[in-house]
Image (cartoon, rainbow, N blue to C red; front, side):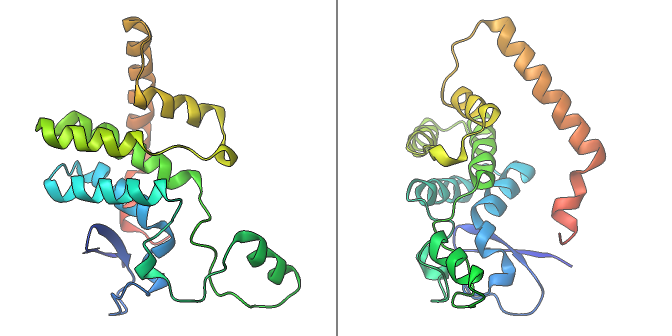
Length: 192
């Protein structure tokens, strides 16, 4: 059973083992940005705590870090080349992958949280801070996927005709409805 809990500005997916330290890898350290941002978006959390979480996660993405330094155990590979090199040799030198090994997941979850926060946060100071943090986040070139980059660009500013925006909205709305009808509870209630 998953026990969601907060640690500073992050949501963690607890494994009910009683260890809630930052070094507990079973609580989703590698996916801490994805877990935090998708939980905020799913819960429509637009509180000041959520905005601070968003800004922290944007800072990590900008620095190309999957988790804060305090979550390091010392068993992380310095980079993915070293990690794979030793694994190919059959040597288990590093217990965990590199902190800098970025994937698309945290960027996509952050984009979704950004859209939600911009919709629900009304305070102009907070909105400015949200936009400022998000503008500093750039997708790494090695994560290039045409649909993802097009979507990301639209989040940062989109000057298409109104009817094209409406079609994009309907396309996205249809995807959300299908997901909620078929899969919505799986991520938050079941351990993958």
